[in-house]
View 1 (cartoon, rainbow, N blue to C red):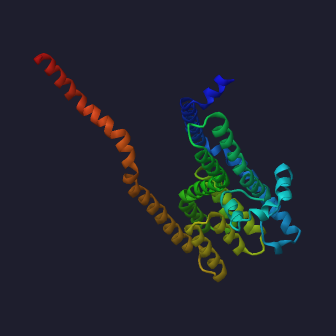
View 2: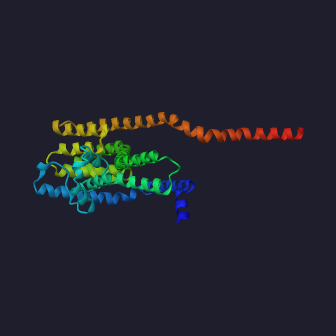
Length: 326
């Protein structure tokens, strides 16, 4: 037993585990990028279910609620959240919008978020206490170990928020990379005589290979345009779910075009140009920040290797010369 404990508390073993996890995460990321279109069909089916639910809500004449459809949510996490009243204890006015921006809809993801936000601090705290006080104290004083446990609890409390923010950033990046191309396709469909609902539905089918998230949002927009009582609500919903200035400007322009009867094609042409410029400026910003980001890797990895390649032959020659002279 002591050998097993020493094995799990050995810093070299921990380092090996961390390296293995990093390699595994890298492989998962690469394989996920190779087969990124594999989830398109399932995502479109989920949106189709959402469309049917919107249709059912329209038939039931409950449009006055104006919110997202609520699905049934039963299970252990739901019971814990309700009994502890976590929705009031951990109330966050922005969490519903953030969940929609991350692509999670309905009460079940919200319940899951509150459950993990409540449980993760205790989980991190228990793991830190067991490790630092029972397995390996690393020779640290008691107060430092207690502080480390408190830090672990705080990290557990903010871990769901960090995960959600990371998911929102990735989804927004995926949407905005393909959004100008989607506007170009939408412009072509509108100028060809298609209605805006049919054009959006057609573009959602074509743009899925570039961005599944954007295809999902456009399909949902098409469903909301068909079944919501006010078309402005559908455009505002798209702007809130993406939370990007480019999409917000497009939603405003399309709302104004339908309200005042201005040509939709000209508005889409201008919006496509602006979003393409936004995408280009974002790429230029990343390129400008690249030298600063490469400074530390170059100092740590490139320069030592360069010095070794340059100086090693000279050192060998000097040693040979000294050996012959001796």
